[in-house]
Image (cartoon, rainbow, N blue to C red; front, side, top):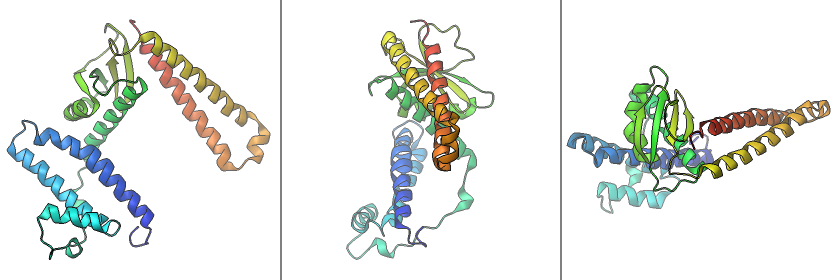
Length: 260
């Protein structure tokens, strides 16, 4: 993008990397290593990575944000006024350092945290509310979530976490959170009003069914399909898929609200 002078794409890529990956994910997870009990060497490694990535990010951002990046970079290096970020070499990618296993584990962590955060938001849980999770996982996926568990606990507000084979005998209402390779069940006892939650889900279900029927009605109209632009028709097909998925998700949530 830089070579093509596509500065908008450059800015978006660097923003999402710096804010979403570095600040939102790595900085928070690094606290497990720098504040935890994993040892001085592990803490030093995490701090080195934080510093190294911040240094390179400032170099990449400098053409777009020259003043603030110069100030941060000088502070990072305790540099004097005769030293400038403009003289530092441009970062080069080192593809040989890619670690597919680590990336797969990290993807499992981010997806799990994201879905648990969405669950908390959907149920209007207070940020201070701690949740208990029962994880029913597919064969071979447990080790991935075991590695990710400390990060999940920290970033998703999880107090209790355990792996189970089945939840049929679990007392009390549960909320289901599907993720890749696992179904997570959140104990709802004491967290929400079950009658209100069922009513809310029923309203969502009615809305989803109405929207699905509207999209299906358009696609059943041969005049619409034949005359409308292909992009518009495809958008309605996408809506059918999305609303069917929403209906399945809501029905699953209703089914797991048992025991209340």
